[in-house]
Length: 317
Image 1 (cartoon, rainbow, N blue to C red):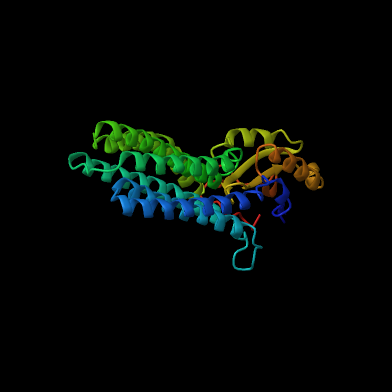
Image 2 (tube, one colour; image 1 turned 120 degrees about the horizontal axis):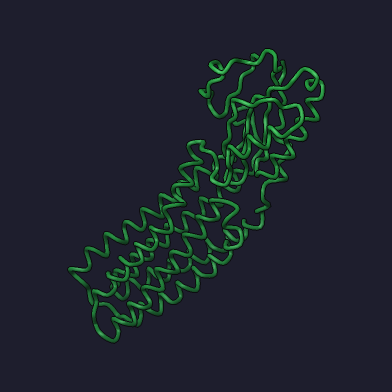
């Protein structure tokens, strides 16, 4: 018995994020220019905090470039080798960016702890002015991604990177001003550690969401029980099993399922399928593959195990 494919017909239902290409390019150019300026001033002033921040900002440039590459790859056509195309690159990059962000925070914390015991004299006012410029650069870049950050994990990652850097720069401005008036050089490290705690709190969920998608977990915004209940509402559908849900990319989700239908409904399966497809679109599932089974001869409960892999479905019914 043949099964019904709906792959590839819903491409237009994924969120439209083409305008973000410009946002990524602007963000990369702005941040790269700032890294160069910050590094030059850091060397000139012998400021470890500015050099460390420049290194951290350079990791953000790399993250933005990776996210832009993932968007470009996700638009490439499928091939005989990569039948889903390169959509999954967006998931891989979202995980990589989350790891980079956590690693960068770890480096900041390590540097801050080392410097608390051995603070170095720095020009507080110079540090404050450069960091103030950093707030402007990172703030503008974060704003470019703000309205789309809940639509895609890569966009959320870019937004988090930039927002985090703006926060780091704000802390550096405050510490620079305090150092200028008091010469308490240890303040720089103390502020860095406070910022690290704030960053980890905000970044952890992004990392967990990325790991979930990388391991073919059900996307966080989708409730499997709700999906199953919605499919069972369709006329002619008696039961459902072998239901698998996973993310094709950070913006597109897929489903495969075996549907048990009665003999009378089998001839109407195309219309049943159309109804199901429509229901799934409202649940943020853009790609679906259904395999029908007759109610009188579908597999028993012991045979209907859930050991199939997410990207596989049976061809022998």
